Amino acid sequence: MLASGFFCALLSCGALGNSLDAEGRLTWWQWLGWPMFTGPQALPEEDVVCPTLGGSVEERHADALEVLLSEELCPFVVAFFSSSSPLSQSTKLALTEQRLASSFPTLRYVRVETEQMSIRAFLQWDINYLPTYVLFWPANSTSPWQRWQSGKNANPYDYHDVSAWMTKATGLVPSNSSQAAAGPVPPRGKNASLSFGWFLVALAVLHRLANHASGASQVTT
Image (tube, one colour):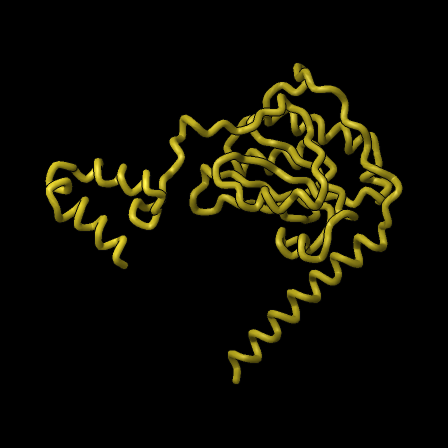
């Protein structure tokens, strides 16, 4: 209290305060390292450099997923597939993922093996079924997070269906993926346990249903 009163008198009420404008006093608080007086300092947009992978597919372990949830500026799409599924192990899916990454080079394409994910990760990403995609597009301020909507006319293994969904969510037009310099993507792994992956999904769904039922009972009482 004494220290803050001293600096208030020095910068705002005393002779030095009279000689400093608002910007000058702000600089003083920043130099002192007291952000509560300076307010949040936004990073200039020109200093923000989003990673560009040149149309390549980024492999990310489930343990490194959480950092993406705090992303605020750089767009990305995460593909959640069970690598123990025969369809996920196919060369066709690998080619689809490579084409998607090459067609939307401004989007980081991240693929994840769901067998590595914990129940907490399933809940964080709001995953109720597999396979699925989660897309983050910060330019859409009202709804930056977009999730793949499964349906009879939407095939998550089909390039045209997924690229159409990505275009609808972002407004981006697919580029010519045949000109991409990125190398081929290997098929997803074959040694994971399919039953374990679906067991985690089931637990995540049951956890949500239990929370929903608990909330509904509290409202009725």
